Length: 304
Image (cartoon, rainbow, N blue to C red; front, side, top):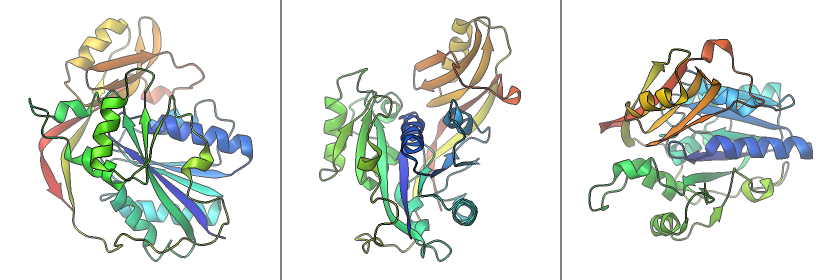
């Protein structure tokens, strides 16, 4: 019995966590035990809280924070996969990468000796924000130079998913990603609502994966330099004051939890779009309230 693995990738704020939540809900409804490894670039640990909100006892969710599973946390990724296989033995595994990770480099670690004998087929789904809010920050005035990380993520995908298609006409972004990856299928989604069977490469327990067409030898790579900063937001500010403070950070991505004069709010920001959402069924751990992670680009690249 081999365990299929789905790598969910995409640029900052594209909607990866929303898609993974949808996968978890469908899996629990259908009785398929699904484990999730969530990789957060910042060290605060927000995504685990967002993933588990309202879930009736998820099978296994592990968060790897403070780096990328494609490079700095690659050994931790393999160790976590081994732990899940030995202790949980799930039917399926989802790896949600950080917004600045390179998915193909993440997939390469699935061929390391500790895990390659029991991992089944693997596929990479890349979620693309149809509004282009964060990616737009990287284009030159003529729109000629696109973001390197975004381009590489799109070109790695086995399936591209355009998210937030209810907010804008998705045609321009669809044309952009199809120019980058002309042979990759593209699907539209609102709030991650897609059938799980479309996403996973094979049903649990199916025959072993076919040989990869891509090379599987790890190699050095570069991706753009990003930095994560934790911001403390004092309680009692109005939602407008909180939004103004966060916009002043000029960040690509902000996320966290704040206590405003109108009550607790979940912060979700991409580019110049900041949303303060009521938590609903999300139980926010006290230690996370008033803390927001901001991710910025420093302008350089680094090699691993």
